[in-house]
Image (tube, rainbow, N blue to C red):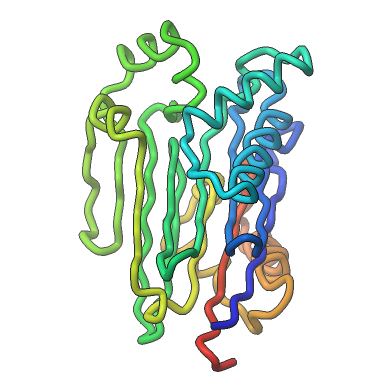
Length: 258
């Protein structure tokens, strides 16, 4: 099975600096790693890069990625750079294809979109009320963790499958170490995309936004970048712009056909 993989990131109109970061690769297996830095915390543009490359290094060394262990390592790096711990205030999404299983891990908020060979599709979006997502970095600071849990009770999962919102308790989410999704039949999947919550800043539903960003003419090379740049122009002509930074990563599974 041939796989095309690509990613794209752009700054939001309401930000002075892009605090999203996304990388992708094919070794030792296909992966996409995305981090969305908190706009009100200092130097999260650097923190997002540190987190992504620490996860990449774990993949390369054949290690199982534990987000708490990753953040511990990132904390040591930010200390060497004399950066505040808040620079690691980032939500994190990873997508991997290994052992015939697609695995998506969402630490905080974000969304993903799956297109099946039969033409059907589904998407999932996780968001938090009051624009206050859970950051894995809170694991490193007991006081910040307790403060967050005292002010936030639920996060919201929206899925096209149920077409309704489902409230999930924060306490339960933290104990389960965030949100994990496994798809063990990649031969049924045509493409998959992950994105930061910036996709919601256009003022469109996630379903509408994903349609703009997934209408590919071709799925070769930098197919995500080409489509994303075209989508931004189309949306701007229609009066829609992204206030927040937007990062997207995608895999196209060729299944011996083009």
